[in-house]
Image 1 (cartoon, rainbow, N blue to C red):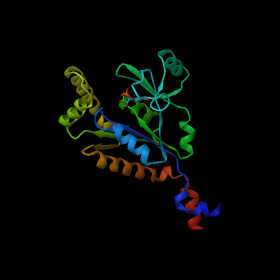
Image 2 (cartoon, rainbow, N blue to C red):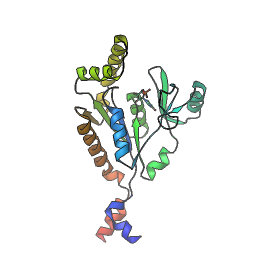
Image 3 (tube, helix red, strand yellow):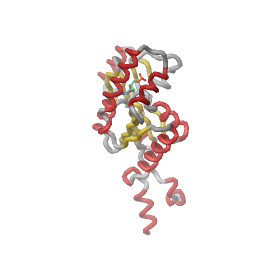
Image 4 (spheres, protein in one colour):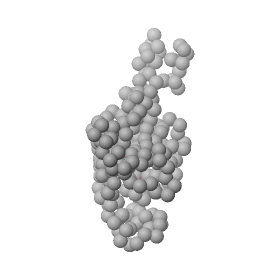
Length: 215
Ligand code: 5GP
């Protein structure tokens, strides 16, 4: 017991809320998956949505899929940290076990848009880390959006318009990473996460540790 208290590798720390946002097509989903696969200390915060599941999406894994009435009930019961209308559907971050888990040192990854980011930051500035991923150019973003499926020009144009609108919120983030190549972007996102974990105010075990160093 005394030994574990003096070991720097077992110091207690408070978890953080790591937000990744980007216009669709900039690589956020890929980076999120890579991060969750590579790092055991961070878990995805699964959102609640009224959007119907896409093929392959699993309830409770990608989202909790609910109908409009259930979403209304959750809003009334104050079950959300934040919620927003995005592309004609509602999305929200359930409070669930996040608050307690943060105290125990669990980190959470949030794949949410700029509106949700703003609301989460207003509620809990000390735990939130905001990262925005940008595409290297508009031409590349369009290429990625076109490459995804066989949608019509109108659909692609609408997506490009939305992407431009999302990009306009870049300056509400703590970090901005340009996704030139996925490996490089992922490495930078990990560096941000590692550095944020080392912030003095998150390392709640430092006081007893330093006290012991000085005694
Ligand atoms: P999709 O329907 O493609 O999975 O997600 C559409 C958008 O909703 C994405 O920009 C995603 O970041 C955002 N989103 C997903 N979950 C939440 C949430 O809980 N809150 C907010 N504000 N946005 C969310």
